[in-house]
Amino acid sequence: MTLTTESTAVPQQADAAEGVWTRVCQLDDLQPEVGAAALVAGQQVALFRLLDGTVLATGNQDPFSGANVMSRGIVGTRGDIATVASPMHKQVFDLRSGTCLDDASVALPVYPVVVSNGFVEVRLPEGLPSSVVGRPRAVA
Image (cartoon, rainbow, N blue to C red; front, side, top):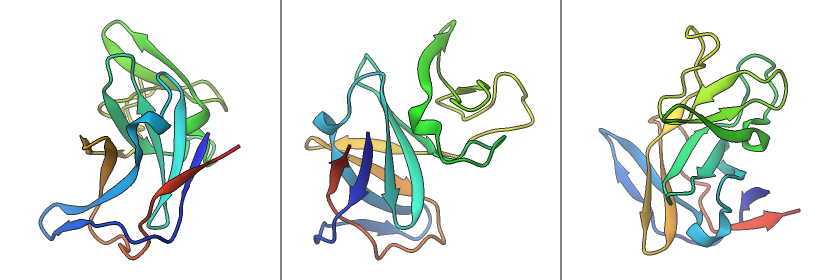
């Protein structure tokens, strides 16, 4: 599933020291253990809702292939670590830290996530444009 933003006004909060929180989708839009891609302020983000309800966000670009496919990866675990395996070459990444478990010199960017009033919000890094916000819609 891919989520894109529509151009509707959605409140956002800016904190110069920490970046910008952007409302991305409703929690119910995310299926457990299935990734979803969202385009937020021009940044591709992969969202993962785990079985315990935790929502995690990483960059969507596979650092090995350069393809924006991480949201299509296989969600699983290694021990107690929630992971996603790239659908390209099957490298496995820790969803909490972004670290590649097969090559510790490589990592996905990870983004803070909060669920507020049923909406998933992601904090974008500083320096990204914040003018594109909106309610996502599912794209088949």
